[in-house]
Length: 128
Image 1 (cartoon, one colour):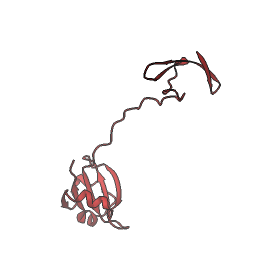
Image 2 (spheres, helix red, strand yellow):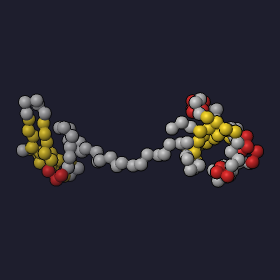
Image 3 (tube, one colour):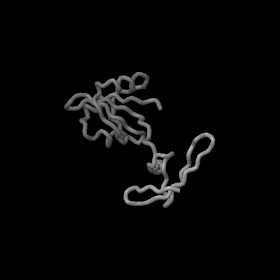
Image 4 (cartoon, helix red, strand yellow):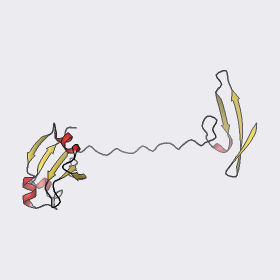
């Protein structure tokens, strides 16, 4: 049995070895350490829900130039970026499109755009 001191606390460690040369350390005061380095193991990962998949990509003109907006099925906006990026070209390559976002389902989502901008917008249905 030997003792180590860390942050002012003293811990008792007992080392065992086997034919394979592995060591197991038993740490008192219920602290976990990695194989022989004396570092605490990180806590368990907390599982969180993943973000939902974007379903629509709307390319619409604005005062600063065309922008691409990502929406969920519920028409909740989850992203906005420049429509001239390579990502837009990749996303729209195999997506089906329609012209105009004047329907009632887009009223709340595109409320900051004029009727002319909404009528000229291109709505892409993204593959899931």
